[in-house]
Length: 282
Image (cartoon, rainbow, N blue to C red; front, top):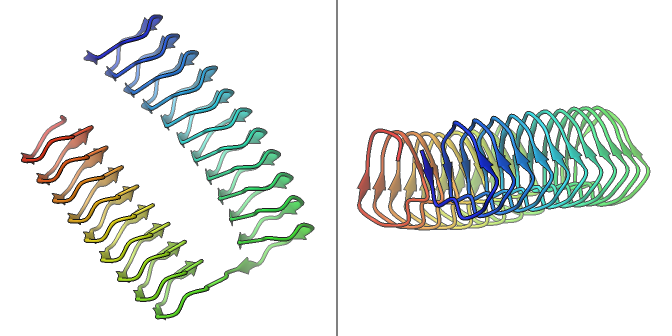
């Protein structure tokens, strides 16, 4: 199934939508591939830059370089991105096997989970967030390491906001409200954040169980994985990305649902209009 293939090149056996750029698109599911280069077997969305994109799930790859087998989102910079989940890699250098988000600076990022690495240097195993300066960050979990030097195995948190912080791991909670048992990062807005992993929740409302990233709008976010939910309404079970409009989004994987209404079970992408979208893949 191929839709809106505006660019040249070769489009393979998978499902490809909105391939605006040239190059080669492989067997997987690719959406909004605006840049050239080669896109491999995985699921790729918004690949704006050239070079080669491998087997994994890649979203918003704005920069060049090579993207490997993992899940990569918003890779704006060049360099090599290999296995793992990477989001918002704005800088160059090499990003290794782990989960990396917002790597704005260069250098090498190793096997762990790294978020908002704005500075260069080497980041190895562990979870690191907001490493703005260079130097080396070791095996532990480190967040908001604004200065250089070496950071070892410990856990560092900068909870700047008030309110109540529950039993889980919370970092950079700039807003008030209540934060529950899960892992919450960069919660800038108020409201209630309960179980799960939540990142960059800029808006108010209630965020439920699951993994949520960049929820800029209010409303209630349920049990799944939600990214860039800019609009209000209720988002429940499943994986949801870029939900800009209101309404209710239920179980399944939903991406770029800009309109309101209710989106139920299944995988839905680029649902710009309102109404109800239920079971199946749309």
